[in-house]
Length: 316
Figure 1 (cartoon, rainbow, N blue to C red):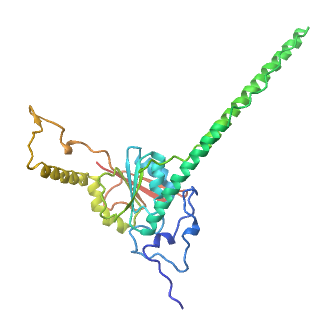
Figure 2: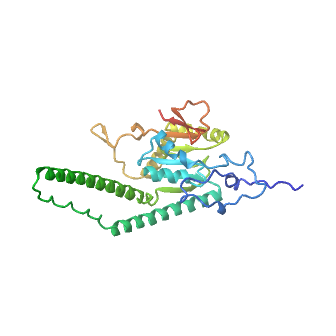
Figure 3: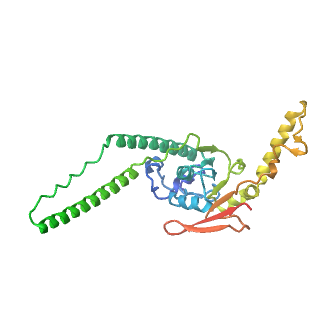
């Protein structure tokens, strides 16, 4: 009996795939990544599960962590980048996906290029539709009331005219609502700003996290344990303080040998102290597995079967 073919770490995520994404324009074709006979995912191959996050939970991630356009969103072990792109499109936030697997990085870049191209094409089609649509047909005018010798006949015709006018107004309102609905459906996919989504090829255990305001983790328990010291330091602001101290040290070295201009003026320090500035709340969203020993701020069961658990952790 032939020995089964085992999946390598670089192919593990491509072997076990979630069902096709809801947004087919953004998802890669199944034929691009065929499943080979006998392939399996071996425990210990990766810090991440062998499947991608489902796009249907992205709105829950956004609402749970209250992501806005001012945030910088990091997805550690981002896979093909679907969550990064979806968050950036929905919120306007900058998004950075950290991945080290070569095949997943290639899929991330391909997906990003595809979304940007689709957004541009959709915007062009919508503009052409709007410019060539023309005005709506003007409804026929209601005829004038004919003079009649009898008062009763004139009253009857007046009521009929009023009824026709009401029916015409209702029809116009329905047409306007339908036209508005069609325009909304023709709205282009929101185009990503240049540089809004960034692909970072790096080991997620050593990548810099200082600028992140929101981090998303869909990692196995052992992956979270390996990352936990750095994640805890990030939540507590210690990574940023260490970075600022390093930058201050560099500045002091550069100032050596130059004229020393005091930053004090009549006892008032100019510019303020970096450490005295209160940083924005940092938010961590974990998918399925959370930080051991730390109580989440909020929990939410999501997905079409409520079988995906999201856990939110916030800086104090």
